[in-house]
Image 1: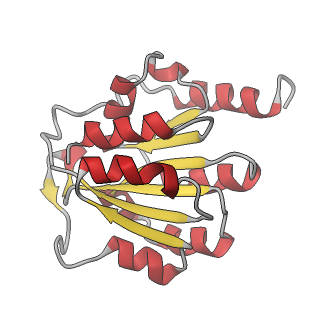
Image 2: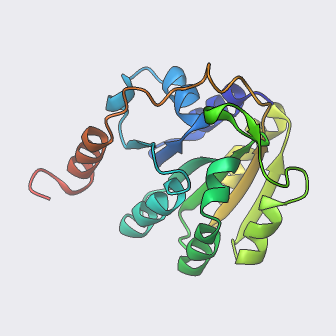
Length: 195
């Protein structure tokens, strides 16, 4: 499936979830919403720290257990911090939904193949780490139709979404990210003016 199809399905089912995107997901998310890049409510774009988006999302899930937290990760990013799978499973946040766009390349740096691509199984790793539920999709229609039920499951939930590689230089989409602005806005919305 194409990344834009996966992102469109997630946005359609987002509801009031807190959302975190990183690397290859950022541009597609920005293109699919109406708000300006740094003004998307209850949303963070994590750039410059590959592999950290999932643990930032974990922190949000633990701090706000009444809100669903959706992380849209990349396979290359997750490989940078595989220990996050065990950390998330150990904390067992029931409200965390970890979607990983798997395209087999480090897309944003030039589409170099991932080490051992085709031989590792991120879904199997998440399952072995202790995620409450795992799923895999490579078809946009099946993914979109399964999302409402997936987002009602008791987490942490790990979902592999197989996407086609795209030209990494064309999808450099984190330019202009003002993470400090996004974080301050999110903090203000979650804990109030003086928080």
